[in-house]
Amino acid sequence: MMNNKEHVSQAKSTSENIIDNRRLFIKGAGIAAPVVLTLSSRSVLGAATQCVSQILSGNISNAANASCEVGTALAVWANSVSLNAIPVSPATVDRSKQTARGETCAQSVSRELNENSSTEEIVVRAKLPSKEIKESKESKESKESKEVKENSDGIVDFKIKFKSKPKKEEIFTWAGGVQYGVQKKYENNIEEIAYLKNGEWKDVDEINVTEVPEKSLSKDDRFQIEAGTIKKGQNLKDYYVLEGGATFDSIFKDGDSRTLREILTNHSDSDKAYLVAAALNAKYYKNYVLTEADVKELASSNPKIPPGHTLRSFLAATWGE
Image (tube, rainbow, N blue to C red):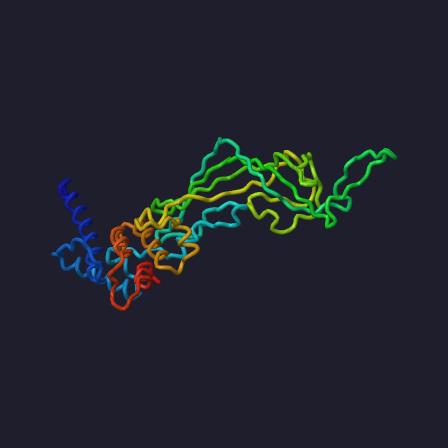
């Protein structure tokens, strides 16, 4: 039976071997590293060599035997949160997207909010029924009401003031702890309605429309108006806003303020998307073949890439593509 000192010594040795394996991989791949440790154990040297060989050749079925872990593919990280149809529907964690360890690539935590409401006015163009707007007028000759049509084409401008209140906040993070983004759910209703008549806005309590022309809500599609009766105080569909999240600059310090999710989802064929995926792998997998510092080094102006590889093909090899 080992005593406590022997346990500590064995744990330390295992940790050092893992570090050695990584650094040997870096050296073998031609990546600059501040320190390359001298390996005294031939068995460890053999394991590290196997790891490098398996990764770079694309034959990674036995990579774990060499004390290194294959990362998760870029596309899996990118699609770990389903954006659905924001702002109409909320973003959700896609539990089918999992790491090599069988964990979901993203998680979320939520909390209820009690924040103040905000208001916003937008102009909506809508078509009214055949007798668009009725206005009672008394003529000198009779006391019959007259129907007044605002526009010959039946299109009338409405100014609607919406009142929105955030009700719930959900924070999404990738496995490993890097923040994906923050989603807020907003409660939405109509506070005021007015229509344009002779250059002036006239307040009304409700209005009935037969058609809302496409793109009439060009200012902000969070506010959805449908044909029918629109009433003051009417509750509309909730809407969702996804914002925040870690930026490229927060990791690589290059001034790029775009979020990591934007780069992964909208620029997936770029070098930066591959670097983001590698950074997420380095953050999550303890024995990923690249450390966080290594990934940052690859983002430098003159990265050292193994012969026969581009930055993308090299990084793709580390997650088995």
